[in-house]
Structures are given as structure tokens and as C-alpha cells.
Amino acid sequence: MMGNGKTTLLLFLASLYAGCVSSPLNPAAGPDQIEYVLDHSDTPIVFTSEAFSEQVKAAAGQLERSVEIILCDVDKGPVWPAGTVPAQTPTLTVEAGDDGLLMYTSGTTGRPKGVILTHKNLLAGE
Image: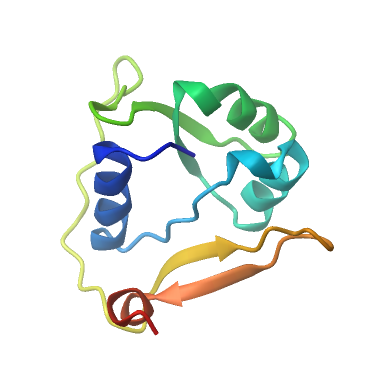
């Protein structure tokens, strides 16, 4: 849950390269929908800029499980928690049919719906 910037792009591309599934959060969606998306997607980590950190903390605080929240500057990168070092991602083979992005609808007429895009979808714009 970050604005546009170098770090936002790098985190998105790095997550795809690592074989993770990214699920962008929309700060305009409101706390109930953000909480729903975090819960429904089983999101373990949220990268957020300072501007949206309180929204993320409030939504994550409503869940029955913990969500790691990492603050980021959109141009300078993550502020890793004291005493931690990011884990090295093993070399993976990511296949075209692997999930890469989980997007949620706006939920204007009900709960947001999750839509999975594969790596092939993202590369081909299919």
C-alpha cells in the first residue's frame, strides 16, 4: 500500500521474480475493505509508506493472525525492522502459468472479488 515511486516498482517486480503473489491495496477502499482483502488473501507481509501506515495497522489489527508491516520510502526503499535482515530468496523457476498478481475489485456493490493474474497474463497483457 504505497504511492508511485521507484521502490513500489522494485518491490512489485522482486515479488514476481521471487515467485510470490502481489496484491496491491487501495487506500481509498476504506478500512473494512482493506481488512477484508488482507484476511481473504491471507497476506503475510504488507509494504507501506508512512502516509498509509496507520490505515494498514488498523486493518491488520482486526485480524486473528499477525501481519508483518514494513515501512517504505517510495524512492529510498524499505526500513527493515531493527535486528532483522531480509531473507535471501532461493533461486526459483517461475512458470508462465504461475500466479503472480491478485487484484481485488472495488467492491462497490458488495465484497471485493479477487482476480488472479498469471505471469503470462502480466507479460502478454491478456
